[in-house]
Length: 405
Length: 83
Image (cartoon, rainbow over the protein chains, first blue to last red):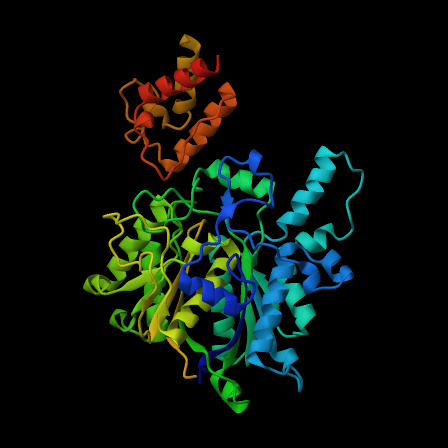
C-alpha cells in the first residue's frame, strides 16, 4: 500500500532571503535579487548581472573548522537543511535517523573550491593544493554534509541533472517515502557557481541576459545565473500525523522524461511527457491543476517551448491556467532552482497568493499563457505543478496538493 | 580583405554538411542547417580566428547574421573598426 507523502518543513537560502520567512515575504512583494556581480570581477564579464546570496556570512552558521571544510554550496545546503528540520520539529531519535533519506540535487558541486584551487595552480604556480580540495568540490559534498551536520544516517546521495537536479532529487525522495522504503526524507537542491570560470562558460553559450531576467516577456534577453539552496522534509502522512506535525503540503505525483535529442535546445514533446507523467502518477486530470510554477528561464527558446508544451498538455484548459516564474526574482539557481520553486509553490498554496513574474515588459505572442505579470495575485490553489527542464534534455515535473494546516 | 572573407567562409563551412559546402553569399544560415548552437560555436571560432569580440545573444533576432554574406560583412566591419 503506497504511503501519502506530506511536507512538514522547509528551509531556504536565496538571493531574496536567507530564511523561508524572508524568502516568502520578498517573493510575494516581487523583490528582485538580480544585481551587478560582486563575487567575481565584473570587469571580466560581458554579462555582469547575477542573483547572489548577498552578505552570506558562513561564520553565523559554522565554526572556523567547519567553514574550512565546506564549499559555499555545502554551506547553503546545510543551512537550508537545518532550518527545514527545525521547522518540521522532528526528533531523529528512536532509530528515525537510520531511516531518514538525504537526497540533494546539485548541478555542478563545489565550483568555488575548484576555481580557487585552479587559479592557485595555473596562475600562481602553486606546487600543491589543500588536502580538502577534492572532498569540498565533489558533487555529493552537499548531500554528505547535510547528512553529517544533521545526523541523517539513512540512504544518502546526490542527484545531478543540471537545472532539474533538485526536482529529480525531490521526486526520488518522494518515491522512497511513498514506497515505504523510508518514513522520512530530507531533500532539495543547492548550487553556488558564481565563479569566474563558470560565468565565462555561461557567457560563451550566449544565453545570458545583459540586463535582467524577463520570463515570458517580449524583448527577454536570456537567463541570469543565481545561487542558493532549499531543502524540504518529506514524511509519510501517518508518520507526520502520529507526531501531530503540521501538514504544509503534499506531493502527489512525479513525472520524468528525456528528450534524447538536442543537448541544449528544449523539446516540447519531452516536456509534455514529463507533465503528463506527473499528472498520471498523481491520478489528476489537467483540469485539476490551477497553477504551474514554470521553469521560465527567460531565454527565447525555453519560454516559447514551455508555453507550447503546457498548451499541448492542457489543451483548451491552458486559457484558464495561471503560472509564474520565480526566476524573474531569483535568477536561475540551477541545481537549487527546483527546490526553491517547490517551496514557493507550497507557500503560494498556503497563503493563496501567486507571486508575480516581474520585469515583464509586455506580451510575446508565442508566450500566451497568463504568467501573473508584475503583480502578485490572490488565488486559491488546490493542485499545482512545478516544472524543471534541464540542459541535456532532462525533464522533471512534480504535482502537489495544498496542505491541511 | 580577401583573406578575411575566405577565412570566414571556411569557418562557416565547418558547420555545414559536406554536400552544401560550396557556399554563396546569399545562402541563408538557416537553410544551411546552422541551428542556434552551431551559430554560437561558429561565433566562437570567428572570435578566436580574428581575435575580436562579437556581440551575439542567441535570444535576440540578429538580421546581420542571416546569410553567409551578412557574416562576412559583419566580420570585415569588426576587423576594420579595430584597425
